[in-house]
Length: 242
Image 1 (cartoon, rainbow, N blue to C red):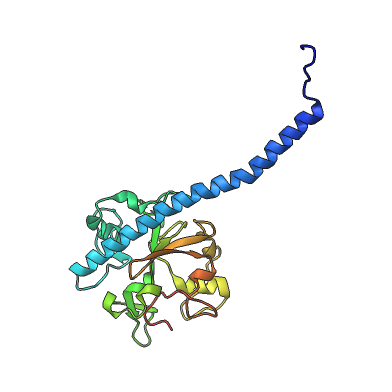
Image 2: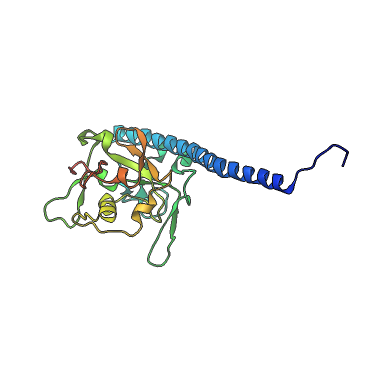
């Protein structure tokens, strides 16, 4: 060491290391949130494109929309076809069906003997009850197969069409089960599904939602997803829900 130069002491080195560690602890979460925000923006763009595709489909079919599962197969190999596959010709881009923040891209369609008999590449789920009118009296199901049309929706800007979903089988969002799971308020035919609420936390403890009027926004889980049928609920899923 040259005369007059002074080396760092052990205490000084430890102080510097501690400062770096503190800065890292502060900045890493900020960088992580910024990265997730960028992914969320991509997801928002994807849902907006789905909204445009659904609007184009509705124009071609007298304002009707496809069901979450259609009773024919156009290529997914399920024996039936998801809404996403039905409107794919209006997009011609399968990448918009995948969210960069998804825990696992796509989902498996199980059978009794094979938990992943068919793989479906979509990272989003459809509001099951948007497309149906109330069931007839004494029906075994809470929704029937009589189509709703976009012109019949009374609150399109408040009604969910499509949202994020990190579950094992995501062709549809069953909102009565969600209400039941989160609040214990179980309507007819609804039952709690353990962990159902945890499937909707893809973006900072919430999800991006495409509404029937075409706009997309983030809502918190569970507060933003509770239906108008329960106390303090704001989301609309079915035209007949009040």
